[in-house]
Image 1 (spheres, one colour):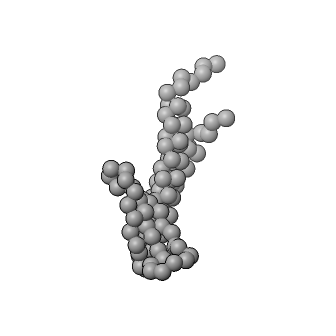
Image 2: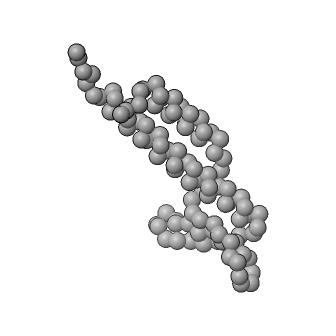
Image 3: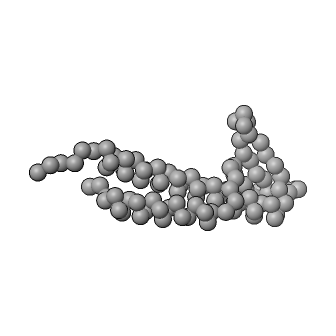
Length: 100
């Protein structure tokens, strides 16, 4: 059963308002190594040529980037939900209404 346009629109607008609150974003992964000498923190990402790059981080950089990576994932999930709602609204707008 499809949801009404008003419900879809409300959900879409709620999701859109969360985008402004997300904060800094970045792609990649950050992790903390548990053993070994030297810095314990790493950031890896794909460059424009889709090659993996890596950077050793300070503790402060690690925590900042950890938040930015989490924000990136939240952004992607939110956009995915918004796309699904947009598709549902489009389907409702393009489906001919039934006449009695």
